[in-house]
Amino acid sequence: MFDPATQQEADAPELGRVARDVLGESPRGPWSHVPDEVWNDWRWQQRHRLRTAADLERVVRLTDDERAAIAATGDQFRMAITPYYAALMDPDDPRCPVRMQAVPVLAELDVAATDLADPLGEEAYMPVPGITHRYPDRVLYYVTHNCPVYCRHCTRKRKVSDPTSAANHGQLDQGLAYIAAHPEVRDVLVSGGDPLTLSDDRLDALLGALREIPHVEVVRLCTRNPVTLPQRFTEALVTRLARHQPLFVHTHFNHPRECTPEAARCLRLLADHGVNVANQMVLLRGVNDDPAAVKALNHWLLRQRCRPYYIFQADLAQGISHFRAPLQSGLAILQALRGHTSGMAVPHYVIDAPGGGGKIPLVPEYVERWDEDKVVFRNYLGELYEYPTR
Ligand SMILES: *Cc1c(COP(=O)(O)O)cnc(C)c1O
Ligand code: SF4
Image 1: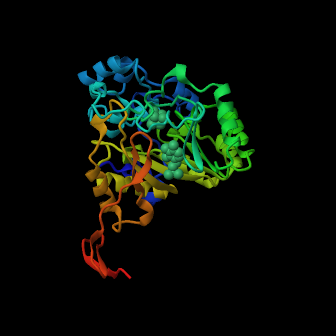
Image 2: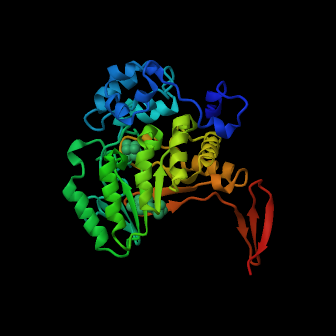
Image 3: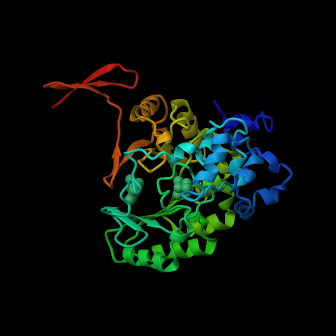
């Protein structure tokens, strides 16, 4: 299995593992000649995103399936990959976990009978465009439909990457007005797309506007930039973001192969500025349906002060059935974590109920049986213990 620590082995063998997380750089593939200051410039990364098979062919040896899929899926869900993320791909192995998340395959064209265009019923719970208000005290607020990398498993495929559906200024204001008019909303999840595709000024203004609403207690920025474009979090931006405390960042690492020194620096920068970072992994067949990979990922996240928060069962979005792992494999992952490692490394495993029922936690069965006078439990080692029912 891939071990991010070994990437930097040669740099500083005398340093501990924790220090190695932030030293050195990731592989740069065909961009090895690009100077550091250019490579680390997020604008350069954005401008040089790979969008065609010819672009990608510079980095990986495409399979016939991938090449055909890039052509066939382009008008439904575009491909875009930052050079940084592309350079993490295995050039020869189409089963590489980074490659599987970013490069289309023909299986995306298969729409299963149970697939849904709007798997979480987000439109049905939309009081105004750009706001989903499903739970009593918190809302999702969509501020853009762009992302640096379009994840092939995206739950909002129907909108994300479509330039014609992007939230305009009027819609953003409407969302703010809705939140301001609903005093029960104490928690706002700023989402998209990826809100970090907005400019520093617009993000700052948006968070400032939310902060001016007295009943908004916490704001969460939901962004995959720490994974796909960690350079986006400059010192200047993070300093501005951190003025809007209490601010939380929810990100989306899925595999240890994404755990690079650049990503580590990004997470640590946020933590150093007092921004709490949490991770929401999506369980993906062939990518991370493996307890050892999830454990390594979560250990790395904790070393960067990022708390594993959720593991999501892949939802019923159209054309991602090849990514769906059985519920049993998610439960097996939780069982392999609980008790065997820090409780902090054990996220909640949830399924977002199709049609808009919200998140439902799935927990491995630790109750062996309920008797009249006692409950018989199984602990993490499978040993039986009793507790009186009254
Ligand atoms: C996931 C989600 C939230 C936030 O849920 P938490 O369990 O509080 O993290 C809020 N609104 C919607 C519509 C969601 O899907
Ligand atoms: S970053 Fe998030 S919104 Fe954007 S494509 Fe990936 S999963 Fe979808």
